[in-house]
Image (cartoon, rainbow, N blue to C red; front, top):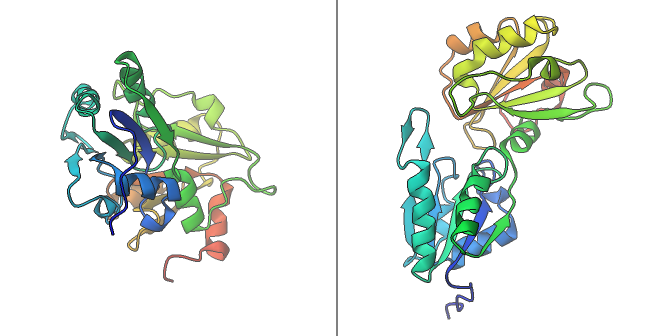
Length: 254
């Protein structure tokens, strides 16, 4: 017998889908996906996660890929409001964690202004997932006493970041959406004090079966990236924790 959907109508749940592997969904996220009347999901939601939805649920793709947006952000905001006003229970599903470079705050501001009730369900962010599946502890007493998550692609398209704050020793920096700016990121990190020999890596399709980790240094990462087939989605990780991949890698085949 099918369970009764008890989700509140006319409400939106902003749900983190994790970094890709469906097994990394939280129990609450899986339950909400299963019970929702409508699912609005992004490009980075892992394969198989959308399939958890009810057969009769509306499934609306609102993905954003590099230089290609299915729907502009304003249209997605309006869509969420309209679905809730249809008295549907709506899950807005985002890869990783919706409040870490997921534009979740922007969408909730519109819902709040429109009087739409909502809840937030956090997810495993890509940095945590890629670090764990690549054998990079993002913090480590011998290597890094701080970790910073930073976008490699600002709203205006620039990479105008606080480079002196990022280029610090004993520090792990994870760049989201930085593949297109990898050369500039490496140049700036070196220019602001980090040695060209500083370990760096790119993790492509983190936590998925085809995950690929490219080990490099700040000095040679742009060249190694250019010689590879790596495309977004991928993260750039900078810091000496990257060296631990050689001994702590448990996921990728060797």
